[in-house]
Image (cartoon, rainbow, N blue to C red; front, side):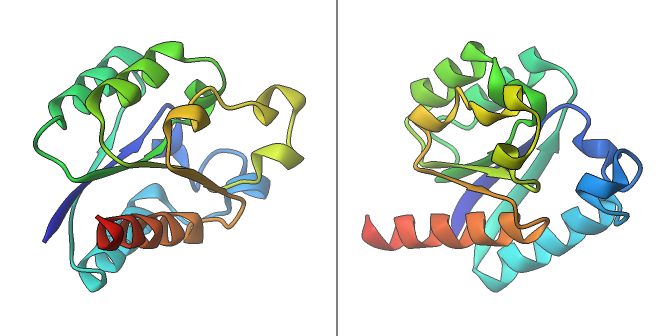
Length: 146
């Protein structure tokens, strides 16, 4: 069973409460429960970690080195400017899928650029919570090729 770390960045604990037109009304807890179920169906050992603090997220990425087989990350707003997260993902050499519930290219212009994409295997955005299922499925496909 492959071990996967799913990182959720700032404000993603507020899904279901904040900006319901973008993120919907389903709670973060409910979505996380579904993501765990999807991971089980895909035979993945999933750890979900959420933090509103960039340094804590970097530490968590570092802790995955040599321990996790893959990562999935929705870094929230950090996606657009955190070169430190970029460097952390690059440093651990773990296949990583960048995910976003919303279509970042259909939102404010500052969200159109991701500084993480260059060090991720791919990016899935705009499918709501299903972006996470698609991300897990992409990791499974990567694992099958190695």
